[in-house]
Image (cartoon, rainbow over all chains, first blue to last red; front, side, top):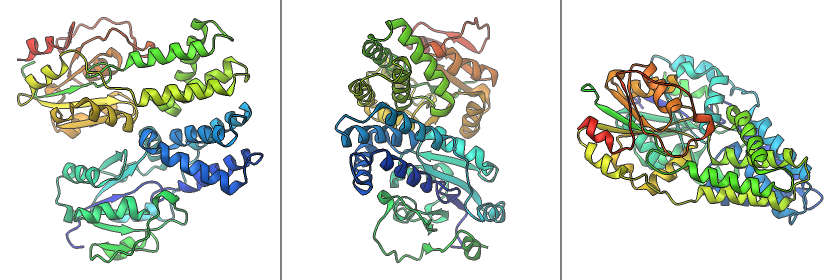
Length: 229
Length: 229
């Protein structure tokens, strides 16, 4: 831990609330489909289509909107009224203009670490939408570098760490996803702290127990300060 | 010109063909709408909706697909058959999986410059889609750095040049858009070469005559070598 010089923070559900907006949108989608299928089945179908589309569309709200439309056509066997498609477009637009709600105490944590560590934001998803949220959040001033990746894979972390011009042993990643924020960074020889958020997308969930001296599982983001200061 | 150390290439319609795929998709869209409006009117309506959506959706094929669907609903006064919406989703998918066709002689130009200059790719648009095209193009090996921006504004070029750790006078941008590739870079004190492509999106067109010793208007990309080698 003493080696750590640069701390990268995940954005969605680490700096600001994200997943609940998707949960709410899924609920709205299932409500629009209830003439065709019960909620849990529509939910399952939408998830399957999202995962199928991931290599083509990537992450983010535009991808999600297109997947909702595709799922609605599939579930309704192409009989969904156009007004429902229009509502799905509205759901997407609302998500893209939603307010940015900071995670409890995150600004206090960034303030306390600032100057002592080089701080980075490292997230995946849609470029424009992540920039929009960063700007709305008011947190941009804390970060020396912003990295928006198409996918949080080992190779992408490797490029980021190279770009930061440090050995992996000086790099710490903090995030809510074991799959995206923790495992690839540990694999590279970096440090990773897991700060779970109450809602996690099924696709990000992994069943694993991590035993590694470069890993910490924390209850909330303020505990970062107890470990690092 | 003697100062130039780093050359950034625009990607769409500078490294590979892009705009003709959008032109073809617009034709397909207008054909789907011909029961409602003549081609040129549908085209105009689609363009207006794309521009309206730009701040929300940004550039790229997913944004374009969502704008087609919105335009179809608007033009048809919500009477478009679902099968037409499905075809628009297909048009988007086809664009996202289209082959990458290199611009004439671009690889020869990159090969000739490699080693003599630091080469960078600087483009705007959708992160995942630009990465896909770069990978398919086989050109990734020529570039020291890849920059994908949400918008090619002065501020974004400023960040890129800072990141490259050079004064603007050592930076040359080569691209097909006066608006996105040339004007912001000249404003910063960098060099810019304009290599027009036969098809330019209306939104990228500007009426201007540039008189600047840091600017060159070239007929084709190979002429870059005559100026730089």
